[in-house]
Length: 228
Image 1 (cartoon, rainbow, N blue to C red):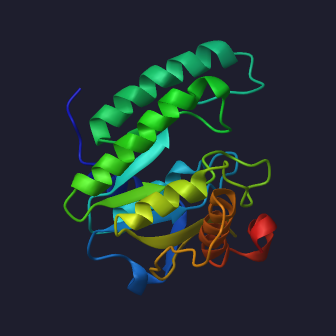
Image 2: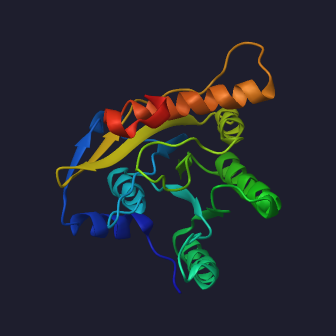
């Protein structure tokens, strides 16, 4: 029940990983805070998306505060009801141990509106009050059926613009597996801004498109999805 060092444990996981890890864009790994690391949610049976977050945490020489799901949906499983409830308890404890920020699961459910708003407020408070904060987040927030990029929930672009207004820069990261090699690709830092007189919905869509296309550029064509 004691708090643990996420980077130390992430490095232990990556060092003991059976697959080879190849890293591209090492020059883009942040050396100072004030940035948001946006990762894709690549997965396959036996390789969960959490490995991308672990690899990023092990490589970035700064403490990262990750926003993670607070519940595993277990959809279609015979143990769905019990599994989802148990996952909430487990993930709440995990969040305490590693200072994670939990968010309701994706895709969004009407009953989670208040909880999602509270998570957004917690993230913004961390960003505004932190000393050179580093935030890690996966815009998609859930597994696709084929491992390729999927469309984030409506509102993610607006949320990202709120982060941008606090002065946070964005760094895209793409992770995937090919030929039994685990690849991690860091992209260049950029500022998220939408010039022009657009509606709230248009700004949301354009910001989301910019973020997802930056990630897509770091992935092979078959994983870029609609953002190719």
